[in-house]
Length: 267
Image (tube, rainbow, N blue to C red; front, side, top):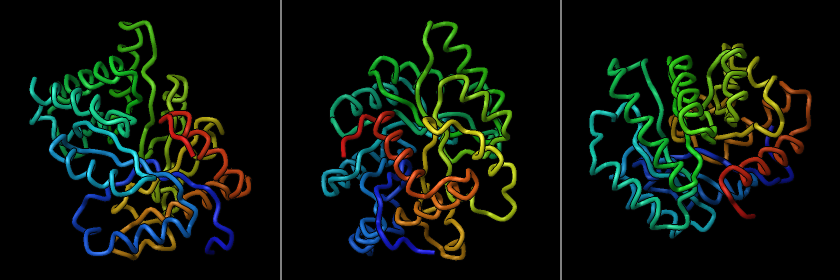
């Protein structure tokens, strides 16, 4: 199925500064516009990306972005990194979040250091009154603990999104209870993604978001392609509509409203 009547969609997690997009970004942009994608949020894995992401945001009016340090780069964290994130996030009105940050114990074992970096970025986001974009892989209990500890010590909940969510329904409820939005990517369309699909069915409508995480994780029916792109967020919305017994128009409307609320976006 392809969208016959484009609707308003927001892709809440992209990486357009990757080399894969450099040869034909204008064409990729025309694709997402035809599919109804009206706003995008560009994530950041390291502050060194800031200049390239900022340049894209200046060129692409519908693109907002985040700045932060990915947990797999936690070894690069130091005082200068923290100050750079804070300064960069304060310098451009198009910065709408801190991240992506979080915990990843699938590829790394530096538990203690990842915790320190995660909590430090939560503090920056709180100081700047910005939401956070959380990367969580094989670490849901630990992420929950960090967020609960933050709430207890600060007297307020952190706010943000669990991006590219792959957790169980029980884990999903943990983060809903903590006030987080849950964002689904192309993985929800995969044939063997029963756990993710079960989670997608239980998320409150006012906490649901969609993303591509492009250029990774192209959804069915584009899974065989080497590069995912923002236009394909349509297929994520389509699958969520199927799983939740809703129309794709309803999913598009709700997730667009939710993204605007969380990230302070205007249409």
